[in-house]
Length: 231
Image (tube, rainbow, N blue to C red; front, side):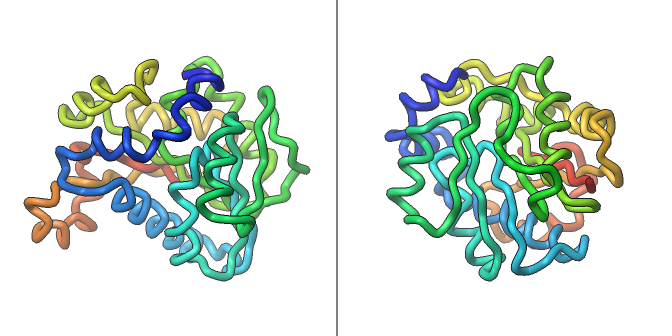
């Protein structure tokens, strides 16, 4: 999807997302919540500063802002995106609490080793695969030594996920990436300690079973996965 297409969808992003995930019985906020819970856990596990500065790469309309504030209340969030309209929508929704950065071209307008960690939530399937290594290398450049990176993606091994992506206007040009391949690309870009957790196994109708999901992170059938790595 191009920058212009993201600008076009910015105003209606939440409603489109809500329609697309309705089959799960959840609202879009549910998905943003567990991602930021996982990121906060990763920050704690890697010794990241509670009051650090963290990068949301491909932040869109700011779905991660509220849960980020809940799980890392002392930290500063930097929202970066190629879509000026999406960043504007985020600012309207969340105010000037986060910092905002418009991405122009292949590089981030940030100094080397200037952020304490970063995450990208369902962003890389919108980036042409030939550009993944460059994007990951740029993320590595702006992260401090040993800082954590979390990349959440849709799992192409899950048939319901594939169906949702194929019917979503926001994902018209999406190219899904297998977890092992995403982890390999992170390692190729120079990241270390790369591993994968699978997430989202049960819809709302089976939410009683979700208490078992932390024991199922090894199972490659979750609707999504995240790669975690270290700078």
